[in-house]
Length: 83
Length: 404
Image (cartoon, rainbow over all chains, first blue to last red):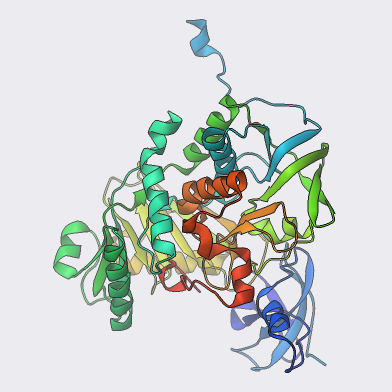
């Protein structure tokens, strides 16, 4: 077992039940300039520490959720449904 | 006679000088390689290589030491081929035996679509002068008689891309060889010197702040693989990189039974037998971003079960060690080499994902040329940091050994 994610619907489940969805970023407006969309698509903070990220519980409730996880220790501080 | 028993230092310790022409962050095979080619090819010797841990403590000592050039894209193939050619001459050049064994490399196909992919690679390789061809079970059986070629596995072996110049090298020796050669030319290597900041003024890096003091630098180079994003952030440079762990393991030694490198992209596993007889087995990258170097049981189980699909006679073999390295994955599975978008004298040699070790001599030599001449060598033109923002991606994913 590598680590558990406390799914707000299913409880503590293995990370292998989830699909990693990357760090949470602010999405540009549809009409934003191409450069802004490129920045959104490619540039990553790639934080070493606690970051807010997307997870999809594909072998569970099949909901997208967000988690605060420390990427250096894999400790999940909190998981919740996005607002 | 007594000289024989004295410790022969391969590189010396130095106090930090107040100023260097080039400060390279990361003393792995890339960082030391850049320093080596700057000094040997361009006479730039006032160089410091700064390392947080010990030499080669990152991916230079964690990879599975496979060398090959049978990539897919017209940008990638000549670049990796240049690297194989440099590796072929490197033992002689560094006067240090790197135990390079060009034993041959097989990429297996288990599906019709995988065969189609290998055929594209073989054609592209041959046009660009790389020894590479698709072979089928009768020839595979001859080359690797110990592999299970029956239809017992869920995914039987249907074909393979055979790349005779591919092989295995002693990766620590490459690091030490470069380090020794650097030291002899007056390049300073500073292990246990962590970079904590880069002072930037008017779009130009002026100095590097380390745990042992601040040094002025004419040029700063980031060659820190998995930690590239964090090191780049110190200078306000952003990168399109996500760091994922990649795990590998080594088994107890066996009598010689496998003298080829075996890679299966469908099974997400690669296997080779070292000179000591141990099997080195690598996995695909972990399916989530992380900087954690801890090995995990699901990955170990995956490596073991896929290896047993190919070599069922190995059941019962014990694992000695399992480890992880942190891979700096880019969106197009190609590296990022060149001057950063934000800071004019800040160069990056990053985005090396799962293919950094085999590319090190070429990347280091060509980046050294760029730093010395300010002209981008043709072989790395396609890998510039700006390519993502102009929609010029390279698309090497199909030829990565184990993409997720």
